[in-house]
Structures are given as C-alpha cells and as structure tokens.
Length: 254
View 1 (cartoon, rainbow, N blue to C red):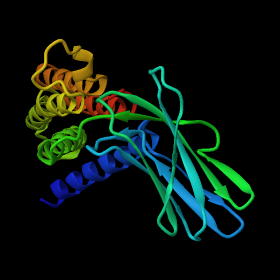
View 2 (cartoon, rainbow, N blue to C red):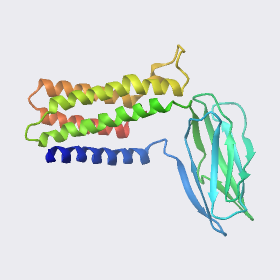
View 3 (cartoon, rainbow, N blue to C red):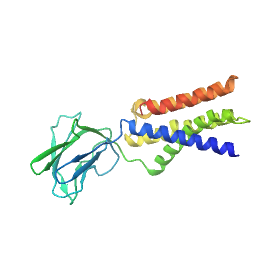
View 4 (spheres, helix red, strand yellow):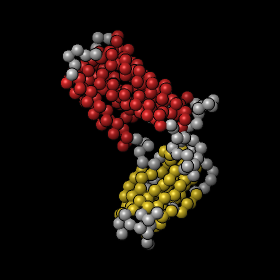
C-alpha cells in the first residue's frame, strides 16, 4: 500500500513538472514584462488567445498614477489598416478593448505608453498575435483537462509500475489508452469544434478539429498497450510509452 502510494505521488509530481515546463514554453504563453519609469514601474501581460464574448481587454497596471496610452491593433490577414484606441485610465491601470472578432481571426496588437516626456512600446521588440476563439462551456473544459492529465499520469504510473513487486502494467496501459481515447476523440474534438464555431456545420477541415498533439497521444497509448500485451518486454515498452507520451505533450502542436 505504501509503495503504491509513493508511485502514484511520483507519477503526479513528474506530470506536474512536465506540465509546468510545457506551459511556460508554450506558444500561447502570454507576453509579459515590467518597465521601470521615473515615478515607479508598470507591468503588462498580453494574451495570445481570446475566448470571450465581449472582446479582448488589454491591461497595463502601474504602481503610480498619471500614465496615458494608446492601443494599436489590426486584422493580421485583412486589408484594414491600424486601428487606434485611447486607453481608459482607472487610476493605476489603463485598459482598452479589441472588439470581438469571428472565430480563428488573427489580430496583431501593441501598446504605446506615454509617461511625462517618454514613450514606451509594449512589448518592446515585436507585436503580439492574438487569435479569437469562441468560449467553451466549463463542463467541456473540465473533462478536457481531466482526461488529458489522467492519461499523462497513468502513462507515467504505468512505467513506474515496473518497480512494484507484482506489477500490473497491462491493466494500467488499458486505462491510459481509455483516457487518451476520451481526450482525443471526445472532449478535445468537442472543445475544438466549439472554439472555431464548427458545431453543426459541415466542410470543416479535420486538421482544425484533430490537432497533432491529441492524435499522437492517442496513437502512442494504443501502440504502447499493444506492445505491452504482445511482447515479453513489458517494462521496456511501459517506459518507452511514458517517454514518448511526455515528449509529444511537450513538443507537439495543439
């Protein structure tokens, strides 16, 4: 019992660490920073994905008052020029709203801050690209993450089961495949369909519904289960399956 608990906790910790690494290295990770000004500092965190019904609100927060700024945005794939919006001052924060766009619209935006006689571009080096998507019901999002992380934890736990006195690698590999089946073919599909407005519509490319990461996670889990059941090297394939599962989670597009 104690050994099993240790192995489960180890699987959870490993999955948490890999998930954190994936999060901070993700292409969707917000662009953020802090600028030191004469009177204090101001910070920003600009998202790359918007899932709202009322447009995307861009914030700049400071520890002093008196800042002014403009938001500049345009449709990356459209023919319209740059739109300028004067940011609203709430005391120690500025905000402006990029109007709601159709799903999959790609917006390019940047902020210019005016502080006394100085101007600052946020971010400094380049514009931020923002993709608009439809909001997804909380229930779908919850099951999306539950099936994804259950599959990751079970994959690692299957490998760690090799250290048990009476390993149940086959049983755990089945549960891993079931989790990724639910994730890939049910909840990820529904989530993607809602985000791009594809529910109830035809003619949507499969590549917009089935992303690379979800498909590869499902394939790896199925192949790992087959190899575990049909070879004598169960422990080897359990570790290989966990390695490739975490590698796909870290590196594949989604």
